Length: 264
Image (cartoon, rainbow, N blue to C red; front, side, top):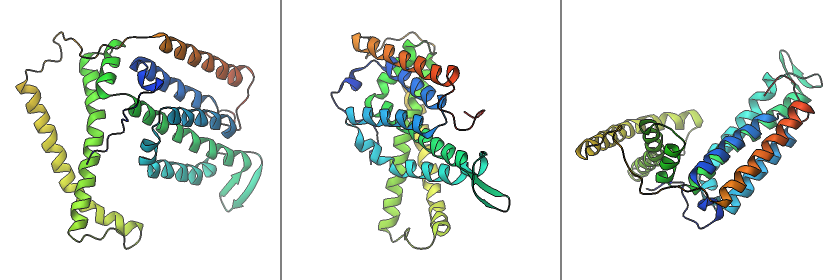
């Protein structure tokens, strides 16, 4: 089963240089961290959603809907109890929720969702080979770039292997739908054994394949795909720089976008 997030489309986001996309990922993270007001964070989240729609990668977003849902639910359920604010809304013994802590929890849920969706956008619009080339052209040592590219390649591989194992066991009569959440979790534990065996076997085969081909991390090498910066890349980086400057001015100089001071 192929669970790769990459979607082969001919959009302007797909055509951007991988270095621009990596810079954009860092910029989105920084923009999300600038504010803890849900209104401001929601603007960044909406921007990422618009980019996903422009890249025609909504199918990849649908693939991670459960992960996004869990992040939002846990953030909304936990953060309001840990953050404190002056406007009290509810109290029971030592537990209390304020208006500011509730808004802060919503902002954290949006922030985590933005982090996941921006990473998804990068993987949905960039081939693994392009990412590897981008890491190298940014000055990252080849062993580190190869390790990052290999890790990103193995994630969908192992996810696909896990989905195949689950389907095989369900076809043999394994019931994963009955009982409560804890009971279902207990049924998933035995499935981890064949998944670990599959992962060890795959990594062993990968290492043997690299040795058979004489892989040497320190050897000079050329790239099949040579990334080149174009006019669209420079314009994109300029827009990102302006957005960062505006957001930093709003937060640091004007003090906007904050519901609980002292918290990122």
